[in-house]
Image 1 (cartoon, rainbow, N blue to C red):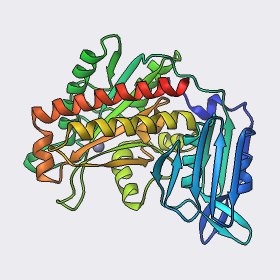
Image 2 (image 1 turned 180 degrees about the vertical axis):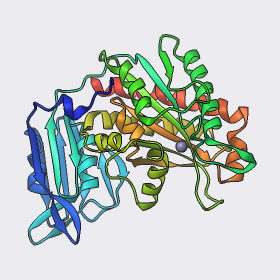
Image 3 (image 1 turned 120 degrees about the horizontal axis):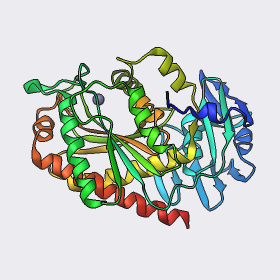
Length: 358
Ligand SMILES: [Zn+2]
């Protein structure tokens, strides 16, 4: 009920399906097919230097096939690897293709499987000139405690306290903005319901953001720090997949997960999510300096992010399995710094979006 599935909305649109090439058991997209993703995409590649560029409008990506970084709008970004060259030509990893789609702000939705890439062309996305609302999502709740730490600390309680602090801060910093919470008390809510709440507010083409708050845990008690995730289909590594299982699936209906994973992702919303993640990370790192270590911006396939049809990030605020982090997470000082850092980052993000609209 109320859940709008992107693939249903775009069912009548033309679907382009590209076969991925299998090289050493990994799927790749050929350079020739990359050019076909959009008529206005221009590409060049020099085999001698192994370097190339991909352009779309004013946006440009520079890459080196052997490199583990690429450059977009003169900023460097990390990759596992960009691609391979063999005697049949140049091939890109799924990860790099996904980066290309979002960094170039291509008006398309897409979905990867191990054998195919499906592309649907969209109308250009024009988010409103000003932000209308923010959804704050306190992770877990009720029977779902989330991660557990020392001193009987439960993730669900910490995320709720941080969510309330953030709400207060946003209300103070942006009085004209509507701020909603997926839960305001200790209550169990399915991921599906969280996305429903967000998308209901999104329905009237209003411009909204979705911010999910979580705490991390791991087997190693030494690992500490905060990190911010945005949605991607090709997540970072195996460890990530284990975490996704924890955060995503325990209480979900398999039909919902199936529906989610068959859904196409909008590359322009993904780009906004990525920009939001980067800006909030920067301001949060400054505000939390000396309190909690800043790790990095990461990408992952979180169900709660996939379900939200608007720019969305997930903040892992610290490790409950690390005593230093846990002590910090339970203080008023941290809550205040967290709320201020996120709020400031949203401000910078909005400035950034306004600039790129021009
Ligand atoms: Zn969590």
